Image 1 (tube, helix red, strand yellow):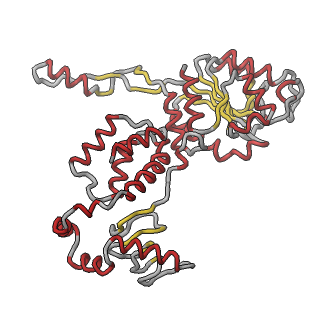
Image 2: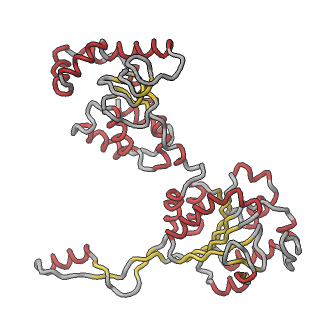
Image 3: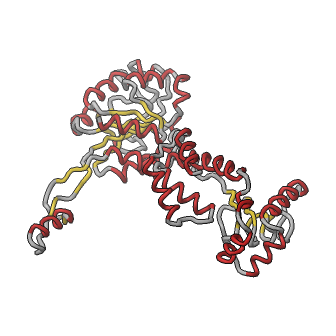
Length: 391
C-alpha cells in the first residue's frame, strides 16, 4: 500500500529515496501514527519530502493516493466483529460509542453527509443537523461531535474528526513562483563560503573528545578560529520608474541578503548602469559614487548581483545621452561591459517573470550583455544565480 505512494511521488517528480521510504516503514512498524490519518500524513510528509519546494506537490499526490485507498473494498468485512469491539474499547468512552451507534456507524455518516449536501443550499451556524459552524452536527467546522467530518476548518479543535479535508498551504513553496524573505535566505545561503581565520578562541568539541581519549581520559581542550562567511557581495539595485511595481519583493531580497552576508555593499542605479551610482535609494548628489571609484574600491573577488526589471528604452542601453535623467557621455552598454570585465562572477536578478522577457527588447539586450546570466526572482532562479556566482 505504501509502496504505491512511493512510486506516485517519484512519478510526480518528488525525489523520494528508498532510504526515506524505509524510514517511513520503520516508523509505522513501531506504531507511530497508528489509526490516525492526520498523524500519518505528517509522518509521511516528514519522511518522504525533504525539499520544501515539493510540499505542495506532495500534498496533491498524497490526496490522490488516499482517495484510492478509500476506494478499496471495505477491509472490515474480513475482520471478525468481536475484534472491532475490542479495538473500540481502547479508543472510545462508553458515551462516545453510544453516540456513534446513534449515527449508524461510519458508512451511514458519509451517506447522511451526501444527502445533506444535496438538500442544504446556504450557510448555517449552530444547531445539530445542517452542515455549518459552531454546532453539534457531525458535519462542518468549529463545533463538536465525537464522529464528525470537518469541512472548511483550518485545524483540529476537539480532535474528534474522522476525516480532515484541509486546504493545501504550500503552493508558494513551488520552485518557480515568487517567494518571501525566508525562502530567499535559504537560496542565498548556498552562496556562502565559510573559512576559519584569526585567533583560535572557539571550542572544537570533536577535536577535544579525540585528544582527551588519546590522553587517557584527562581533559585536553582544543580550540579553533571562528567560522565566518568570507563571501563579499556587491548588490546593485535599480530603483524608481517601473521598479516601483516590485518594491516589496526587492525589499525582501535586500533583507535576506543583508542577513546572510556579513560583507555586503549596496548601491543604487536607475534602469541601466552609467558613470555613477548612489549609496542611498534617494539618488541625491551628496550620495553619489563614481563607477570607476566603485570598481577601484571593491576588488575582483566580489560577487556582483544586479537587481532590476531591465525594462527601458533601447537607447538607454545603446546610446550616449540615452539616460532619461542626465546626459551620459558613454552608453550604458559600455559601462555594463566594464563592470563585467572587472567582476567575472556576476548575475542579474529580474523580478519580471521570465516568460515575459521575450516581449521586451531591453530585457533581451541586458540578458545578452550579461552572457545569459539573468535569472528570475524565484526560488529556482535564485538557486541558479547562486550556483553561477559560486563557480
